[in-house]
Structure formats: structure tokens, C-alpha cells
Picture (cartoon, rainbow, N blue to C red):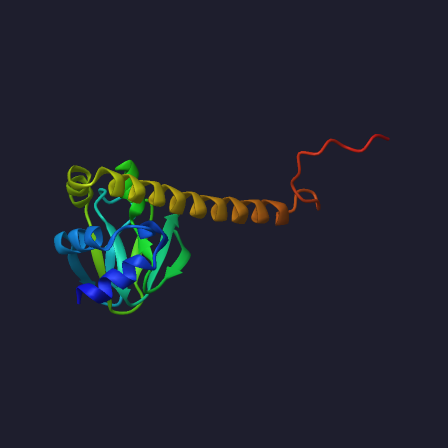
Length: 167
């Protein structure tokens, strides 16, 4: 089973260039979390915990706002979620609900702390890769916000900060 999990992690940007022995070290510490369809890995506002790598199933990432439920993304096998909790230790920013029966590898802050003590270079590479992944997601969110803002009518025109043309 380790071989399948190692292959799964090696295919992910967060674990790019991470040595196999380090992946084995992390997998041996991790636990496998199973969530039935309709259940939640965590809810928006929950205390921070670990990052999850989805081994099987599909999940929806959603936020609630003013009594409305908004689905942001669907994720599948090989996708990760919860990595922000490993970086900023803030409350969960969204709810992750299983759309079908799921299993995921859970990596906790203590697992990364153990890696820090064992191999600082590999720890730093994972941290750098997580930062890159969060930045990719932030860029995508910025692009979506920009597209939504440009499509929103204001007196029949798009929102821009351009000065009026000289008359």
C-alpha cells in the first residue's frame, strides 16, 4: 500500500522533488481518514488541523455567507485540501464535504515538525511547495474575482478605474 501512496504523493506539486524515503517517513506517521458520502472532513471555522490528500472519492469545498451556501470547488483523487492550516494555523476557511465515500491521508503539523528535525532541506522544500500551491490558488481566485467584477454592471458599464476620456 505504501507504493501506491508514494506514487500519489509524487504526482502532487506539494511533494514535487521530495525523496521517496521522506515520503515513506511521512506516510508511516499519517493516518488514513475515511468519510462517508455527505460527511465532512471539517467545517468552516473549525480549529486548524492537518492537510488531507484525497486517495479516493470526491469532495466539495464550500463557504456559507449570509445564510447562502456557495460551492467553490470539487476535488478528486490526488488533490489536497487543508494545507492553509499547516501554514497559518488559522481556523478552517471553508467546509469540505464528501460527495461520495472518501479516504484521505492526513498529515498533521507534528508530522512536518518531525521531518524538520530529521531533514531540514526536505522540510523546507515541502514548505516552499505548499507556498507555491497556495499562491496558484490565490492567483486563480484573483482572476475569478476580477472576471466577476468586470461583468458586474454599474449604471450599465463595467467597473474600471479608468479616467473619463477627455471631452
